[in-house]
Length: 144
Image (tube, rainbow, N blue to C red):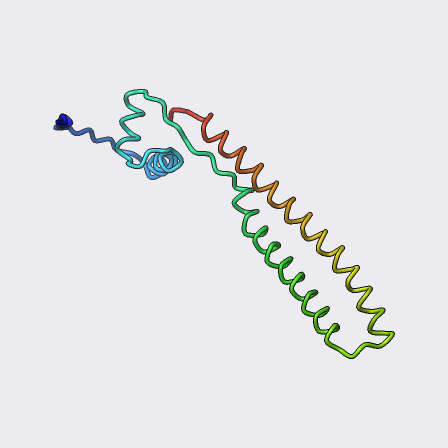
């Protein structure tokens, strides 16, 4: 058998008049906290309980769309290179084509290596930034 959770009625109101600037500041700090409800955030402030805030990295937020674009561009370059080489292989062989194909194949190998290196670097930057963001999010606790 389970016990029912005791419901605590809240029968008193508190009204505070704020300027628009004060309201915006308070609201922004609530949004940056881990509280889901504004009233819970206010109670935590009033009763001096720790308020944990999340820290967002603006530079990481700006970097992610750019990194995604770079990732797509690299994929297009790789696909285009592969398509050109496939087309050249389907042509009747001759000395000029064979030399061009050999050159393109060696260049494709280098391009693939550079694309992989860039992808690894983007992933490392993203992972490092996420780790820093997570650490800051757990360490930051402040009061308004």
